[in-house]
Image 1 (tube, rainbow, N blue to C red):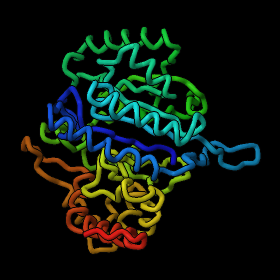
Image 2: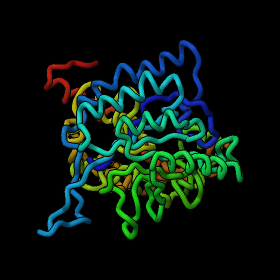
Image 3: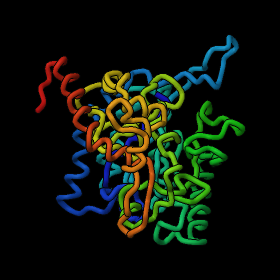
Image 4: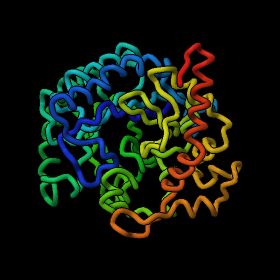
Length: 362
């Protein structure tokens, strides 16, 4: 696998208006204990069911024999906010420890995503001690309260000073769609041991400038995407997610182990890592017409074998958003197809997979 984006908890100290999931927010007392407990109950099985070999072949990087180079994959650990007290010690650090126990220092690169506003030297030391390779500071935009305008630049200066003290080198977004990797014409950080850090945020020229039609971004009418904005074909979209072992493959994981083909999240999970290995889930979906369309980055073609023409998909991809604006994007058509057809199909495939292992589910 080239990359896995693992949301370990919904707990966050912020409730940003542009967030792609309503579940990312502050929680208190019993509700907070329950939210963190979900991740605590699941993470050991999730790690157990990850591939033992988390490397991939990159056909864009050939060796001296003209063969694709084998490279180390990445596991990106995010929230919510992984550094708040209720998540850091009881969940985030144990996950890092479990990944290090499974893979050792030559396993997948461990990357962390944080808003950066609560980052301290102590937390930085503790992450570096646990083999963290890259830290992404994700709040560099005007949507994060207290970081509007020039305030974000003061945070950047603070972080830079802290990182310099510990020898953590800043990297550049360059022209890449994904802030965790670099554009081909720039230095290849993926083959270096780091540690590194990078700034990004919801700005037009940076990561997801248009914002996904999800969560509070959707509710608040903030997504600027249109029908031609194909998130599926971008990094962190569904394109190539089935092709584990090769460049471009990435899946997204929720705290309970639910697996999705993209960070935007489809309307139903593909399976659960608390139940079975990731590769078993992905292998069982190869050849499924709708899933293969996602894998091609062509969500418009999801229903071609099931009576949904491209014109029907386009029609179902247009809605009036909560602010009363006409809105069209392929993610909405994908949602509609999942709700009408694919959700039940995935349940049946999951049931068949598990029954072969002697596991019966309703």
